[in-house]
Length: 123
Image (cartoon, rainbow, N blue to C red; front, side, top):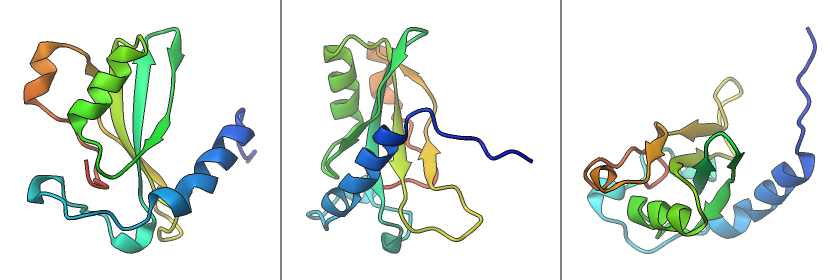
């Protein structure tokens, strides 16, 4: 079986290089945004703006960012949709090192339904 190769090795290296910086302990979080992934996972929050079908971006963000921060940021850079994501540095050998919430359209109705990934890293 062939192993898939990454088309963006530089991007992956840059994201992984930020893990120690972004995984630093943050201030107290509200219960509804509490981390439900184990703290030892080295979790990093990711905001992914999407302008379907033209482009997609992945931006590691501070733990203080909320669903609204990601939606606002995505709209500011011209995206029509966005996703909340988590990247994990340390997981069991057979677990995924990432998680994504559903794609959400940037619209007023989205304000009532945050869509965090499972496991959630603090979204």
